[in-house]
Image (cartoon, rainbow, N blue to C red; front, side, top):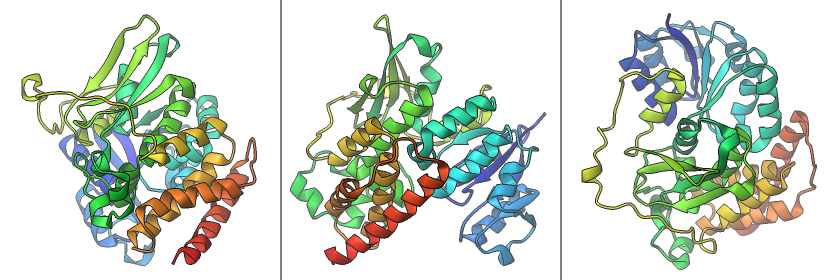
Length: 372
């Protein structure tokens, strides 16, 4: 039988690549729903090509070829075997919770879901017998390496280092948007690419890994690996280290997540050839230059409502940077300011999480007015 899937964020980078994967595996999948944002022209083309029953767009009146459904309705539809959550930002959290409550497995490509509410999401998934399969290349790599989580001593998460790996702090302070978006290895969306430039993205991934695999922060190591060949590794209690390797391509982790536990021949970026790889370098992150990494990990360690505040402030600051309103280092400064003013809640409810998120965003935007 075909696996029935819905894609939230089908017009984004991950969503488009997921449809490329599915197009190569048409006999393995039936698309139930596609959800896009403002790019209704692309969404309508996807609807024509893949013929889902339902579709969502912020431009409801412009949809052609599928019945309109809200994100909540899409994620409540038990026809789905799995839902790929590939939307960006806090919008991914509520639909993910809805799908979990309905017993639908999740292929997760939305960082905010676990950064904002990791304890709640993972507890709910366990209660409902739902699998959460990570799409991020790093977490997908770890997922593939783990055989018995109780025997894992350490997670090793690799980072390319982004466009400023070999640049100075002064270079970063005067960096343009174009320079921040010039990632040397990965083709991603604009927001996540800026997060990769500051290494905030890697800090968010550490928080995700903590929740996904139940590993203490002291046992999660970040290693800079410029070639992006080793996507991550795990160390077992006996000292054995198992790594997942491959050329930088999101098609592979996307396909693994949506076909799990099966594997099929699909899109391959290129057959991996050890003889073509001249060298593999690994180094400690520059914690002074990439303060965002330390800020994110420390927020995760403290937990509670702090990661919610940190994530909201960072997201608003990245948007402001992309719009040319602030400088790259203003992102880090804004996050630190918001964290210093935050009223901490140890175990926030979902309603409190969204309230903190919205309040932090408003305060962060107000802070930018003082910077101009």
